[in-house]
Image 1: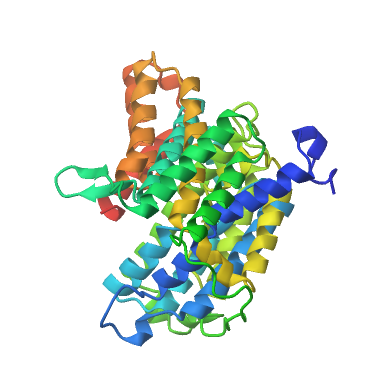
Image 2: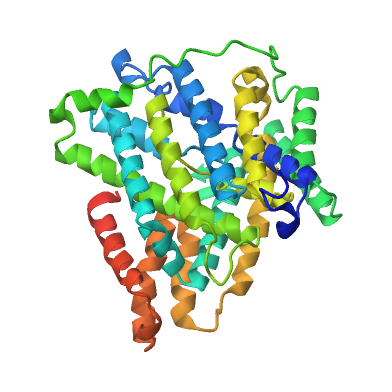
Length: 444
């Protein structure tokens, strides 16, 4: 087992990998509650039941897709990266595809299935891996740092430390709110543990925060420990129903849906893979070892998730929380897969993993990832501009893909104007055109 996952070569051990896998799971366990609520459109009133996906079935599909994705990533690619149905992609599926465009959710799953198959084909040709390896080192560091800012913002927002404001868009939250105070206490505690270099600081911080929350009544204690597993039958195989009626898929709306799933998942996954691999010091000579395998695992997970009955499955940036506590191999992803399997039976325990509990992990990981800014040559304006835009637009637009798009559009412009056109990989010109078209036709 140790030889298969290359523990000695990567300087790790079972304790670090198990702790990393557990930490990653706790950081992303919220998806087990959020995804069913999103795809069932629970927050939307007065719509036909036919537009709502069965929440219980989606819960099971979410867990199963995560299990398969994590196992593929761990066993095939040997990366400490976990997968699950993606946030943002599930919102696009529910609120744009189903609610706005009026496409049946069954046909929406067909679109997810198609995008996964196309991804797999692109990966087998080596095109996806070639594109990732063609991205300049400085932009990879900017992507990593930008995602650090983004997940920190997500953590602070989820915990109520940062809130929306009509005049300034964002502002400090209500520091008299006990739940906000709990999150701040968790962050402070985790910072102290990190400063003292206590092994597993992030994981310990999350556990203690959850315990404090339950003892003070801010987090409801689970009403049970074990529950029965809901049936996945209402959504299983529904993705194939769209194939029975060609008129539902041979139209421009369906094409746009598939292309959007393709675009967002491609660059979210690329950004996550680069960021986590960089944090784990797995990038060699500006290239990602086994990148093709990692991307193929992502594609297979999307296909599997669509068949079970959930929106696009993608690599999770929360994996960086596991890397922060020591994970370096795919064994950590296997541990995360086991946790998702157990979650099927211990779903009541997931209720204690609130935003106040995950906030400390997201903030600390953000701090660690932003350290990559020091590897960017800020003295060269032609590098500084695209790197800065890549980084800053992720939290401001609330989208990893949009941040990448902004930076990659400006990269060839500034490099050409600085008479460094020979250093631009031809693929970067292609991406320039793709991203411009993305803003014109897709991004709203």
